Amino acid sequence: MGYHAAMRAVVLLLLASACKAPLEPIEEPLDALLEHGPYSAGYTERSITYDPGDGPREIRLAVWYPSDAPELPGFRYDGIWPAGEVAVDGAVAAGTFPLAIYSHGHQGYAEASSNILARAVSHGMVVVAPEHLGNTTFSGDRTTDIYWKRPADISATLDHVLSTDFPLAGSLSDAPILGLGHSFGGYTMEAVTGATYATSTLFPACAAGEDSPFCSTMTPDQEARFVAGFHDDRVDALLAMAPGDFRLFETSGLGAIGVPVFLLTGGLDDVQQGDLQWSGLDRQGDFRAHLDDYGHLAFTDFAPDGLPDVYPETAWSVLGAWVVAFQRHIVGDASVEPLFTGEDPPFGSSTTLFIGGR
Image (cartoon, rainbow, N blue to C red; front, side, top):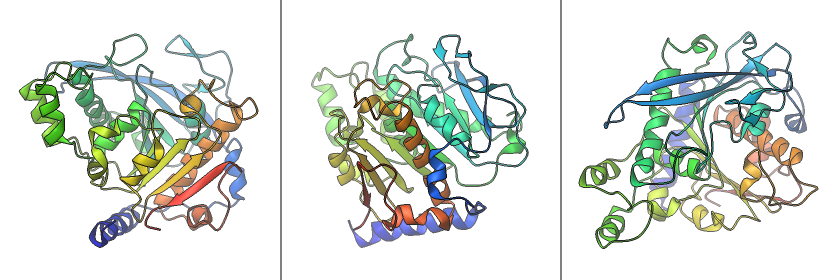
């Protein structure tokens, strides 16, 4: 990694910490992050309509927030997916909390990683997840347009959440905003945080008739969108869980991401090839936790591809703890720094921590 790129990562991190209010240090051991936090996980739904440039698009938002109401069983997200225990439309807890935006994977749904997200929320976060219309469990496969509509969904979600129309507007702190994404959602958030596309090879391949989802319905107008990119500078840091489609950026394009990145990868996952992706990052301010016993779906509510003694509750606990720890790291909470300096072992004995720039 070049000197100037390393320094840029450091400066960005310092600016994010200086311009946003830091959190109070954690007053309990780091292992407490593996347990349910002091808040209930409140949950509610919203919908927004915006125009990404080709007509109105209505998307559903899942919203989790700290609550004092009791968590109750029996609820189903979108009337379909088991929710565990959440405080549906429960009263919002007093105080202000940092914001995270989550992007689900290919043919997933807004709440696809709900057990991880609800665990993080219980420690004092607000998480909002748009459902990417046209690429959900029941609404289609990948075509060219979904590759740019997904990042557009994130920016439209931020427009709504950061406006006075959002019911929790008064409960959001001015801490850095964390982008979260799993699989195709990892790609989505990489695009949002500034990754640049390998346009010199992608478009000639499409023109030559490459049979791929990215090329499937490519037009000159859509080419122009990818050239312009989808960077939204309101997202201050990225936590990508087993991200996919990163080859659209190539390693140099990943290096263009302008915020600190925490990459979570699994040893049982043949999809995301974590080593290759990390080679495009590995900058000062970036981190990677590689979990040997985790498969691609360990980062969701469905985890069949792993060891029985790891899934699912242990995985959700560990991953929720990492989300909270990284959120606290980006605001300069010194109490989590032993995790990111290698002084303390990472959560889970089968986890290897990589520290960028070393």
